[in-house]
Structures are given as structure tokens and as C-alpha cells.
Length: 284
Image (cartoon, rainbow, N blue to C red; front, side):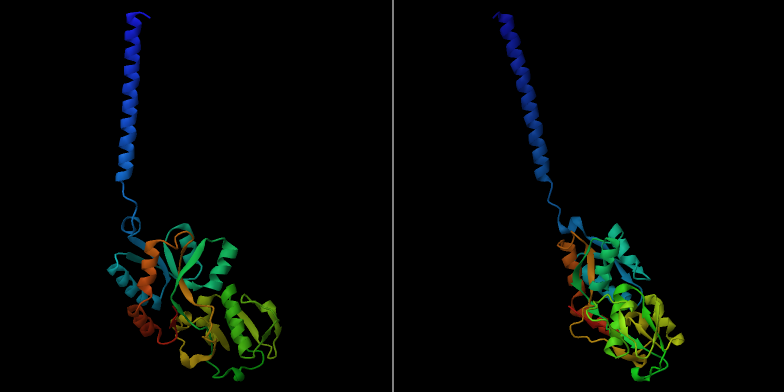
């Protein structure tokens, strides 16, 4: 090989070496940049969240929750809804980060019918559903053919029918689950007429009915009190405890644990008891 050939070969190796060196340097720089970037922490990943709640008394309770969360470094903004159908849809769409308004039978039905990806992360309270009347003071006084209002969503309708069964007003078919409907009524000795209404309306309709099974929170909003309640579901082993819920996959996030802890404490319990006057019971 000629001297010129040797020179060319030397230059070629030199150029390759420079390119290799530059590539190695670039790779090292990328690696260093990657290493320099901190792993996302709670403070960086979620320091501000939105929580969906139902309007009314719960707004007072959540003002205390917000204050408790702020002390733990989590900013909570409450988003207030006026009916039960909106908070899960908003959570599924990512418009809010969590919600707090429902019990497990309701969520199970929503998942079944709407395909939501939502999970329970921490209990809040239980509001025993009751049978209310402004015309009668005892269940035994209800006349034959009495018109009784019930909430029309599947989980609460089944719950309401069980209140009527416990009081001997009706009897459900054997083996009927918690999502019972009027089609599951096997016996109706007083021939009562069941009127299915939206959960937010049934309480305000008591004046026009002989009685109505009303969720406690809606009873309070409708001006119904203990004097109007002629029956109530048992509190022991109640499957209708309400809870905070988040999108599936977020349940182990640090901000979720902070949010739950911001609710489950004595300061919030004191406000809860004050606001609900014994009609709701802390359940965690």
C-alpha cells in the first residue's frame, strides 16, 4: 500500500474515532440529563386536586376537609353537583380527581351500566334511609292503597323496598338481591301504590304522598326531620356506607392517602356531627 493510502486510512480511522467519541459524549450527556431529572414526587405530581360533592350540608363538612388537606400540603377544590348522575361521569372524564357522594351498591350499578373505572378509597359516613310521612305517625296507620314514593335509581330503590319489607308493608321474592325493583314484590297486603321518583324529588313530594322513602341527605334538604320519620333501616352491618372514590389506577397515589386522611379525623367528624345532627353517622 502507498504512503498516500496509509494517510487516507489514518484519516478515515481518525474521522471514525471522532464520530464515535462525539456519539459517546452525546450518549453520556443524555444519560446525565436523565439522571439529573428527579423522580416525580407527591409535591410535583399532585399538589392540587378537584373533588366532586353534592350540594347542601356536605359543603360545610368539606370546608373543614379542605382546611385539613391544606395543612398537609394538598390544595383541594370542591366541585358541587346537584344530582347523583354527574359526579361519576365527571370523574371518568378526568374533569375531577375524586368524588365523595355514593355507596358501593350505587357504584356497582354505575360500573355495570356505564362501564366506569372507579374505585373506593376511603369511607366517609352512612345515612340510614328512612320512611317519612306528614300524614301518619306510625307505619301501621298507613291505609290500604296508600301511595308511597321511592327513589327510582336501582340501588336506592332496592334499599327503599327493603325498608318497606322490614316494616311488613310488602314482601319481596325469596333470593332478591340489594338491587330489587317493584317487579320483585311478591306480596302487597295493603295494596300500596309505589310511585318511583328521582332521589332528589321524592323528599319534596311527601306533601302529595301518604309516605315516602327518602335518603337522609335529601330529607334534610326537603325540610323533613325525625318527627316525620316513621321507620328507618338498621345501622348495624349497613352496606350503604358512603366513600371517597377515584379513577382506577390512582388508588395508591400519595395524594389519595392525604385526601382520605384529611377526611378521616376528629375535626371533620365534629363538623359532620354538627351539620347532620345525628341523621348521618361517621363510618370509617
